[in-house]
Image (cartoon, rainbow, N blue to C red):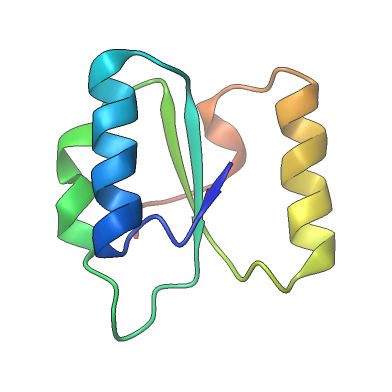
Length: 82
């Protein structure tokens, strides 16, 4: 799981990770003024990428995401695009 992945550094890291096939990515971001959602449009159909709009401070959400990751979930558990 990567947090703040819609910012400049996070988005570029995610793009490199997916292009290289290093690992699948869950991107948790609350989309603030510094966010640029269009940066990751190229991953819209990538089965190894999931975007979840939310706050890292939301302990319940983070616990749910981590539980699903450890259970080997698919990309459908976090609805929608940014």
